[in-house]
Image (cartoon, rainbow, N blue to C red; front, side, top):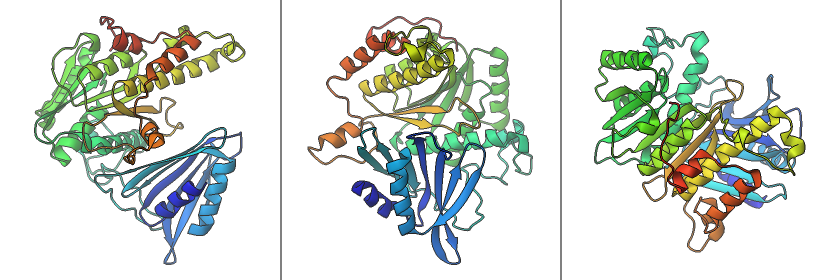
Amino acid sequence: MDEFRDLLEELLNGELLQMVFSGQKQRREVTKIRVRPLMVKGTLMFQAAFWDGKKEKHRNYGKVELTEAAVDWMEQDFKQMQADTVSVSASVLVSKKGKVTVKKRYLAQRRAAPQLSHNRRKHYILEEGKPVPFLVELGVMTPEGRVVNSRYDKFRQINRFLEFIEDICPCLPRNRELTMIDFGCGKSYLTFAMYYYLRELRGLDLRIIGLDLKEDVINHCNALARKFGYEKLQFLAGDIADYEGVEQVDLVVTLHACDTATDYALAKAVAWNARAILSVPCCQHELNGQIENEILQPVLRYGLLKERIAALVTDGLRASMLEQQGYEVQVLEFIDMEHTPKNILIRAVKRGGGKYPLIRPAAAGDKSQEAAAGAPEKNGDEELERCMEFLKADPTLYRLLKRGEPPRKSGI
């Protein structure tokens, strides 16, 4: 745990935004611990919120006390820790055998510093109290900028997604018009949010295309785009497998595209050599109907468990396939499980394509760091094939990427 202690020494200061301990090693009352800094009578302290699935209990720590407590949590209770400061993002993973892996990346652009008052107000990219036209139109905000109570979860979801967009901005080129496609855009809350943030707030030269099968929804979204004067925001009705309207795409977004529709979106993104991909998969049914394994049969015979295992395996294989295609990939929690069970986000950034190192660059010859940074290993294909053979799985994305399977209707 020495490397973890060194990390805590670097992170535990007034620039810490949050630190989250999760992934129970064994079933305990506390399922997650979230830490943030605060000032108590002029002294920097750290408040730990212990979440048991229903409510939070809080306790304040000094730096030395929290360091010892954090080491104990990682040794005894949790498998992973994710931390963010103004200038650093870091993660810690503990394997079943107790091996500790520490990863850090230094941000190209500093985030806003935290407010350290005891009753601080959470900072959002789209701020409360400042009316945003499309949020008012969509019923998330009042004309005065107050967030409607019943839509607060949607407001948080939008801001959370914009944080992921903010993180990948450094990898996007600045010397030309950017193209972004949102496959399966639906009512387009997040599509409008991305356009507003990237073009109106950050001033990037980009156009965004939203694609969905529902023509009535597309017509409504186009009407809103015209109403707000969003000249480079366009919505089209069509299926992703047939879409050939652009030759180059910089950012591909696919949110809650059902089942294999996600695979078609990811395959398209790879074919376009997209700089970045953000995908929140949904309804991963394909492998649920495929996977078989005699060794795992005592678990797979239970339908609910097989469904969840199939969903996790589906997204794990997707992430590994993107790594094999030259992307640095992270699988992240989108928003808290209490708001939606569809909370996994796959974030992929083209390796060597920009200024966005997901992991701190390795020193020359540091093979372990290179592996941690997501560099594809020579036997990556063999590992994938062994895994799929073990589970009798034949996922659509693998067929699209490796076998050149011709497109068919994807469902979005």
